[in-house]
Length: 208
Image (cartoon, rainbow, N blue to C red; front, side):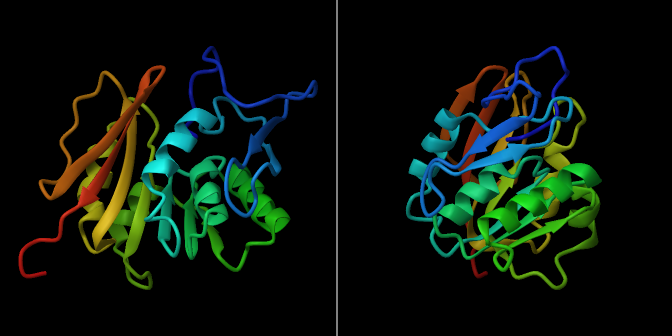
């Protein structure tokens, strides 16, 4: 949940006098660690309250998870998952400067062996197929608002990217009515400001 928003909207997270943001890891191995957030328009960490709620829901699913963090931004969700015992996390971020900052934060935490950053377009990566990647058990999908990316990403995740019983957290603007794959079952929902986050459990097709 680290999308770019219009500059007029507030960002969450503490800010220093120089304008650089801070991301606080709220649970697990790196609890209370503060990481710098690039001062880039609209980039902000997921609010602590939402992350705490989400990871309470995912308490049993996070340890050992193979995580895919699409449209990663600050990487708040993927980093939180690594802190809480995820086996690996793949961060997808199109903005080169933001991607480099995320790599630096993985280095700071000493977890580059479990976290990888790809500086590519998320939708293009999904369209290319998952060759070389094991199916993911936990996906964070938080595309930029009002660009029509959510439904195509959901559809393409079903093209070999997901483990049979994967969890998918999707965040979109509250006003958006979205269709997800028929085998995704809504588990929980949380609203924060102008966005709504929904946690889905993927149901394996019969015979798969």
